[in-house]
Image (tube, rainbow, N blue to C red; front, side, top):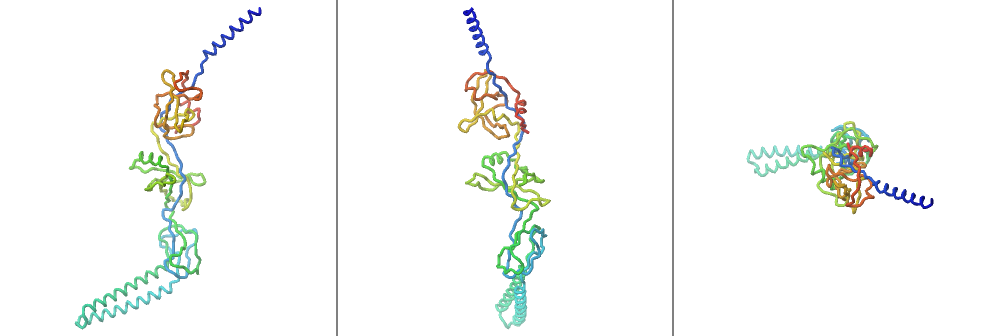
Length: 355
């Protein structure tokens, strides 16, 4: 009985081993999904008024009057500051009187020249003195005009740097003025992304971008990329882009920050899950499964990155099958048993949609 029981156990063990041998591990494989998609990238940005100037005193003197207040909206030509004009009014009166004297001298010299009493040179000298006197009058008027400072354009006043009664030097800063009807938004783009942009850019169309404000809410106007600076920053490897946004509600102001959202479309893009890839020495690979179910290590090139997905620019075809799971359990050139999963099903299980 003991011998019979031993034989029975041995046969049972052999059968179990045969069953285990026949139960081969099946690996999930899939193919790239091919569809139109787009990638949105964000860039830290600085927001500037389309016109932002310093308002300075053009003459030396006491500040007599301030006609505007901080944060006020002013119109073009509106009075802002007045510097004590008394000295410049006196200079104008003096210049006007000297011009009158020069005019009288010119008339007298003209009469004498007509009677051939004086030479033509003396008449020319009288005319030159008269012209010089008139120029002095024009110059005095300009200096007097500089005592009244008006807004050069519609804009918003900033902080006042002086108060009434202050003694101003020529060129002293009074305030700044911003035209916020349109805003220039500057953002830096890495060299590789700049090359992708410029090589795919249709010069007949302007690139549309969006602005995410500092409160993480989108600005209600879209912008247009209008210019790219001439030089790269050698320290950062970036180049500055400038987008223009209309600002009808004056929400944006000079000096704000935000993020530019630039969307790049990809037509007939090949998309694969990130988890199907592995990395060797900064290069990315997948295991492509051929018709004989042999895995081949294949390098791929990434055009763009989505959450949990890669857009492939080179290395795979739409008809290729690649290993989805178990990439650490196989070796290059190994034959495996596979089970195919539809690409759409794979994407849906990732809970990420490339739209």
